[in-house]
Length: 124
Image 1 (cartoon, rainbow, N blue to C red):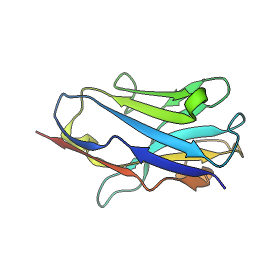
Image 2 (image 1 turned 30 degrees about the vertical axis):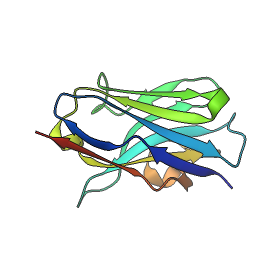
Image 3 (image 1 turned 180 degrees about the horizontal axis):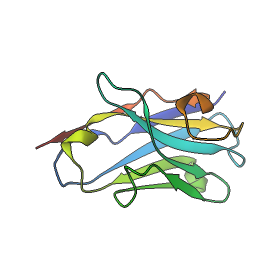
């Protein structure tokens, strides 16, 4: 069973940067698609970025292009999200997700393994 554990969240000032990590275990991830989502209070879970674990190919939501970068370290089974130029509207719980069953699109229900999340708060 795949387990995902996020870390790296915290409080950061607007304009600052933060790097989130997601440690993955319980599987071999060569054929996995992994992603970052976030959910702000009272809002739906929002797709941010995804990566093909074996090739490193990436896909971003329009809202994150140029500010967020997804990457992975195969040797450490760790997924990253580097965030820069943070804004107050980036305040949310951030989740990593994984799936071995690739479906069209990047909806949350296309991913079947989830971490518990790490809170990011951007102060203005």
